[in-house]
Length: 388
Ligand SMILES: *Cc1c(COP(=O)(O)O)cnc(C)c1O
Image (cartoon, rainbow, N blue to C red):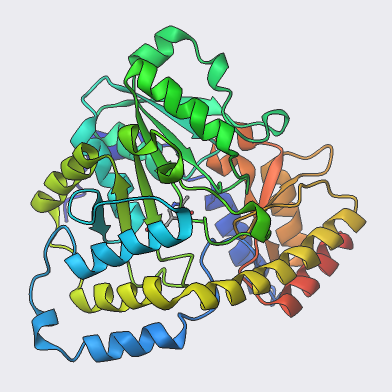
């Protein structure tokens, strides 16, 4: 059988940083150790019943068995627009400023096809969700990474970017609440970002997948769509995945500047045929009726967060108390690299975490904990960590 060589765009991908961890995990598992995985950003809890019920009704309707519209049903786009209005006070026209996606990852990955020419520069705040850089490189764009550091509250230092870099940039990727650092961005940051984007004619791509996982009612994460001028220069990607425990359903949305939404729709028209309509109908129910569910979900994550933070601090491991997301971004103890610490933790305690450098160079010296297991397991995990 012939062994076919991959296209260059795949061969030049950075090496898979988690392969060493995967190997260690197999070894530990083979020893019969009870592994607790705090490594994956995938909610452990099921999709709530009211959404599953809406789905089981929607799936019975034959009209839903045909090709959906590639931009999304109007009823779904309207539910997105209504939700943005209720949650953020943002005005979005469901006809021109909202697009349905097969998960936000799909939209993020396809976006550069619409707006990046070979040689165009994309500024990417890092450590980051890897899709921004990879999808930029797939179309021949050039990622330029902006470091997120503790001293800058994990916000890119926009004033430190020189004018030539701003002028060369086609787009800038930001993600708040942030994966992996769990940081949120204040209003002034978005205002400044919008000002810069307007001055240098740069597209803002905001990934807002975690806005509903927050811990303080008085300090809710923002959408760039609620900041004056945001809709002029930005596209925002959002998703039902984390908000309603729906990662397996594959549904999300892009909202914002009409020409950006339209450009992405043009790519999708050529590449996919939309989201299963039954999923869209159930998702409209989720967005319209899900506020109470989200409140309960936040209470669960808050309990988990507090258990872990308390234990880490008692163990002398330094980390910030996150305001949002279901991650804890923690410093590795002195004398270890991220990879060394995470591997040691796994081998000696069976607890899986993610090395910070896997999300980009400035993540070195950190590890990420996901709060996606129940409180009892988390207590067991942190007990083991503290005995390391
Ligand atoms: C989970 C996640 C998403 C959501 O992905 P979907 O494709 O909507 O499931 C987007 N961005 C980041 C940073 C994430 O962690």
